[in-house]
Length: 242
Image (cartoon, rainbow, N blue to C red):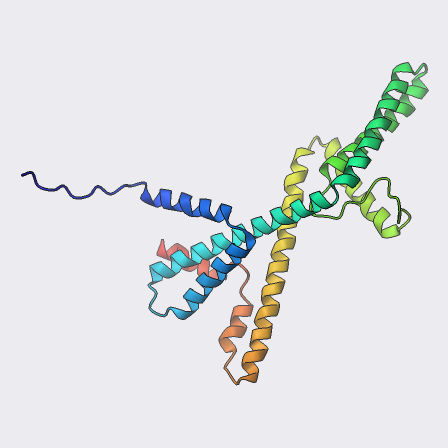
């Protein structure tokens, strides 16, 4: 009878586990991610016998969950705003497309250089309008080029001109495709700020409640100073552990 061979350790197990963990985070919704974050944070606070290696692993999971939460909330915000202003943008686009066709037709029929120059300038402005609709920040309330009401509001005009200028500069630099990435990063920062503000409000409310109960809050106050993804000391500990 041949001796039993020891089980062969798969060297790719760790990488597979990481991929499956990332995949599961990618499919989790906001509520599920928030629950997972609360569970990990509670476990880190209450489990005193956790090893240093186990703590580092959980802290890494916590950061991954928080990053996924920001990503998911960003996606949801963009999706909601896109759906909300889909028809307004559709009508704007149709008007601009019709105007472009008319100007192009007139440009083809133009007789003098002066007329061609004026039409080319007008066509360029219409192309800016078209890209304004196409690349407008997905996280912001859409400001129509042809508003039916509130068109004379100074704040709206100023904001519309500001975004239009960004589009114009991107066209001049042949850099339109980077706008979506740029606006998405700005949205992520807004989402992150909102999460941190909500977390700070919650922690401050808990601090007040604990103070009323006569509980020492020195450790809790210290935790309020840490940012959303952990303090710099946490990162240095992770590097030492590695």
